[in-house]
Length: 439
Image 1 (cartoon, one colour):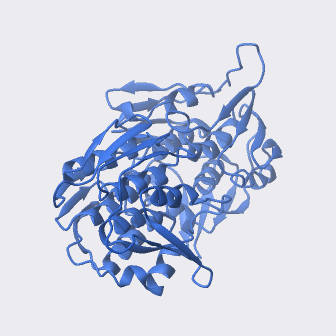
Image 2: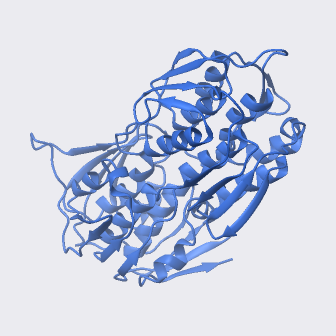
Image 3: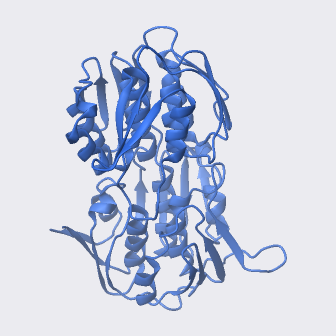
């Protein structure tokens, strides 16, 4: 197990480019299973979760060609249907949260697949009910096999999935993507209401459209998809920059009181993220498709219109993504004022605050979903600490806290950070950070 050793208190400067979006990459790479034709995808982040998904596709029989860093071609013309029903498939998939996204295209195209209980971050329960209910709506049947810890999904012999109307019980991003991909092989038209509509789902829809699928309502919560009229074709696709990295870098500039330029951010796809950081008192300047964050001595947290403590909460797109709340919480520890951070979607993501409290942060953890942060206004510097990363987003938040702290910090279990941030230590060291990777 590796660790980061961080010498804190350094001011950063320069430019940084966000990597491709992990959450989009997992969706569009899975979508290459829909067709036997080549699909070229560029700006793929070469991080652990993505590499593991690519390896899972290789094990299925998908031909994978790496042209250069971040640019791959996938051709699923020789997938082994027996492998997706094997114990090895179940084992590999169960250790990768993103593996849930291969179920939809495999079910639609081949008619049967195992759906293992997914692994990934330890941030509370992450149910797959929305996915499975969507497949049932399309005509699939399922049984749960306790010994395998997996669901077996099948399309009855002699039938195809059939288009239908469905109202999702939650606007699940992966659920929407999975159902969309399965529905592309269904007879007739499928209507998905309360669908997730974030940019990465829109990107998946655009890739599927390029393959020959007919999808309307892209960008809204009401999607209509017609099954492929003929054999789906190949396509070329470019992945958007990762909005979570963009937000992480904004927070990093603020907590270290540094001046940074974040390049090529696809500003129009950031939604409410820039404004959410402005509510913490952080100045942001849009320069074309870049964001410039100037150095500030003090960051003053807004209050509500009636003067009460501001509440920052996550919500389905176009609301604030839950993946940035950990970063915003850490940044708030050094702002002036108080803020309530409300993590609605996952019940275990705020437990990492214990490590921040040991560093000197003033945080009151109200319950598994809410924390009140009382900012130090940089009048009290956090002190170095030994911590362990429980998940990707808490890990990057701990890293930001350590970079602003006085003294040396050690963060263990950084494999979690590597799952979501490509070569983060190398990239931040080029800006002036002091982060050493120790095996």
